[in-house]
Each structure stands twice: as C-alpha cells, then as structure tokens.
Length: 238
Ligand SMILES: *Cc1c(COP(=O)(O)O)cnc(C)c1O
Image (tube, rainbow, N blue to C red; front, side, top):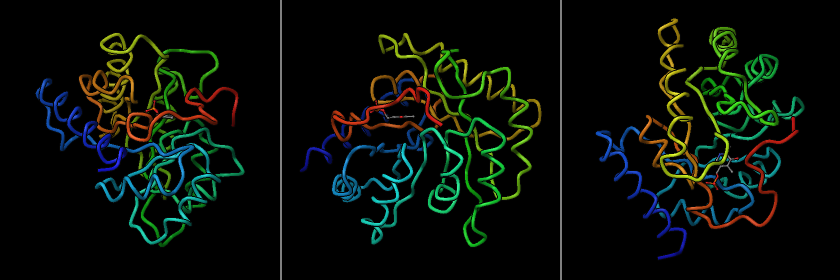
C-alpha cells in the first residue's frame, strides 16, 4: 500500500470513529482531500485508493492538475481566496466553491457558470474567530449575504465554511465549530436551506465532527507536510 493509501485509510477510520462517538454516521461526513502544493501523481494515487473529491486553493495550480488528470472522474472543490479575474476559471472547472465572502464574486460566478453544467455549489466563508487578517464575512454579515446569494440562478447555496484561528487542537477548537453550526441553524430558521458545514482540517477534524461538520477538508494527514505556499489563513490575498 502507498503512504497516501494508508493515510487515507487512517483518516477514514478516524472520521468513522469520531462520528460514532458523537452519535453520527460517517455517511453524513464527506472527506475532501486537499491537494494544494502536491503534484497530479499524488491526486492519482489518492484516486486509486478510493478518493474522488479534491480541494484546491489556487486556480491556476488546480487547472494544471485537472488537465493532467482529465482521464479520471474527479470532483473539484475550490477553497482558496477568490480574485475577481479568476472567477471564470473557477465557474467553469469546479463543482463547489467554499470561499465566497463577497456578493460581487458570487454574481460573477453565477453569470459565468456554463449552462451545460449543474449549478455551482456554494458555501459562504465565515470569519468565525474574528481574526482581523482573515477572509470571510463576520457572523453578523452572513445572513444578509446569504439572502442576496441564495436567489442567484446558477448557484446553489449549500452552507457555511470556516477556518478557525489555530489553537492547541483537540477539544479547544470546539467552541468555534459550534459557533458556525449555531449560525447555520439560525439562518435556516430565517428561511434558508443550508445543509453543509465545511469545517475541520488535519489538526482539528475530530472536534469539527463533534460539532456537526458535514465536510472535512484534509491535506497534511493524507499527503504529508507541504513545503511550499503553505497558506491556510488567506492573509491579504484577493
Ligand atoms: C490548506 C487548507 C486545508 C487543509 O489543511 P491541512 O491542515 O493540511 O489539513 C483546509 N482548508 C483550507 C481552507 C486550506 O487552505
């Protein structure tokens, strides 16, 4: 077995075990393999170990990998900061976008989504820990933005995404994840239909699952440590 295959097996087992501990089923938790900074061959190895959904932070890097992997039926998720001049490439090549935090960007994605593709699946990125430097709307702004994005014709608003401030890991992250869940539930009471909580990374996904994550975004625990462009906090881009 390759390292990637055995890492995937361990992550899947840990997801199932966390789900079980909290009275959930792993069928309700989608694993996204975050392949940023890793080559197409690593994605291919993960695919052969049963992984079909991948997430990327940089549009051009992702497009290059998609070209190299055209022969595989992969589902691509965009999770990075969105520059306006990249919305067309994102609308044309991804199934999901988790990092929408401005109406302007959502309008462009909707206008540029090709007719032959299903609607682009969208999560709003929420700055749940209130860090000054981070992407994402404030929890207070999320309701208004969600109400504006939900009617856009070529998008389907699915839920919320967050990258909480790094903490010691373990249960220490649970209040931030709980806050995202509470916000999602409040928006649903206001009339939205959000079924997705995209939260949890390599160091904290058990805590995210404990608080209701439906998608976890895992890079390092599957592919190993990144040596270049390791940027999970979205500082000053876009
Ligand atoms: C890089 C990244 C991840 C994956 O992080 P790991 O710690 O490697 O699991 C998840 N989400 C976002 C938004 C990222 O930028």
